Image (cartoon, rainbow over all chains, first blue to last red; front, side):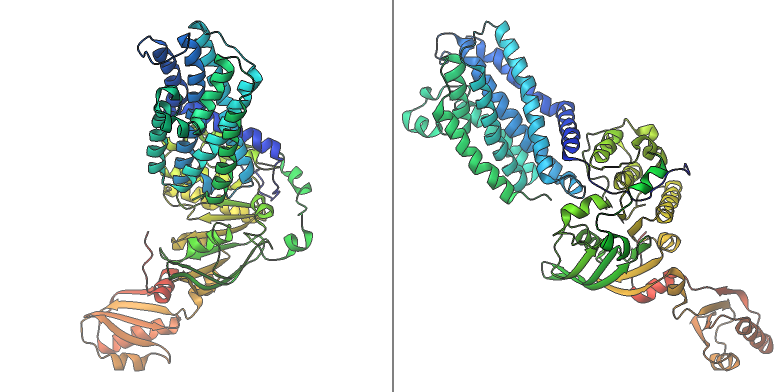
Length: 256
Length: 326
């Protein structure tokens, strides 16, 4: 033990910007260190990008297969990190008392949530980079305005993030784990991501169109595959989901 | 940061409250879970720069009291002021002032490395300790790069202590700080807690280790069934009604009335078990001499004669009727 250390009190909170920087770095570092998260958010989308591009499924419509596949996989990547990954990670942090422990520090809740959001967005930058690079290698021809793509991804992140936190903050961690994975799988195939909703019977497709997965996927296809402008319907749908899910998560989230 | 630099920033944000009032003031605190009262009208005060130990068996209400003070739970009735602030209403102002060690381990990102976690908590504070130095102090330098989930129970406790201290708090809550530590780490932690007191940090600790409370605390608050059953310095508690005891072994069936008559007023004799005798009374050389003289007069050879000081443990048993589990 060193005798020179002084414990004379000098308590005060750090500036929020410093907290946010440190929190974001920690969240991102933990995401990239966790094998299951990396598998879910990086490995599976890239594998699906290759798999869906194989001429196995005839129903993938459109002129060039890869032009359909890349927007689908981008939508999947966002759903994986903002919804399933965030829900499972947060659910277990809640279970193991991480959120409680952080609640006894100077870190405000808002900075914690902002840090998580920023970490997810940074992870998405990495995902988009990898998915697009692989897509280009597979012969993908991007169309449309990248700004609209980025906007749709941010809106999708808010909608899915709100839903993920709502599940993580209200259900037990084990239930969250099961639900987040199951919903991911269902939305992948029946939520307009891997299979275009046009392939389903009309009554189902008409309702499913308003799922966040379908809105994000449709919007991304509209821009990237068809070179369209900002798809207002899709953007509005995602905005409504965000406007419902984020306040609901804030309202019902229990930290312990 | 050199120690001198810290004095300059000592100036509290609310000079009137922060400099003078008690560090912790709890009055008439009541908290029930599912209709069962776990804290039942508890009142206590901790002066600035002192250490109070909440001592009691498991389920006595220690942790609930601490968690209400930390702002985790809402009291059903009563008032709690921590550094003059309301733990719930003034949470944002209070949290940076306190350091918290939760009962069950680190309670933070288990995938993070020890050093990363301490650095993160340091980033929450305006004037944090040097994290490498703090890790060294709690003996974790060797495992700085180890993930929290791979640390032993005792190592997690020490990391948890470092996390509580890194922001240079004015008041720390240590819930069972040495649970799971080996004796060496426990002594090191006791030394560190004494150092906190010497530097003016107020400390609230819960423990069910009597020697821990006796060694560290200025004030011990004995809690049972959510109520304070005794308050005082360790010496006061031992002294309160504290009589000496003399035990000896001799043939069974000695005449106790004769023995009691031979002792001075206030002392009494009893046969606890056949052949085992207990004298209670004010501890004095005369008491011992009277016992020896009576035995000599009776031609009785007293074996294993021992004078015992009442321990805190005796006091505790008497007050709570409960054994402290180790």
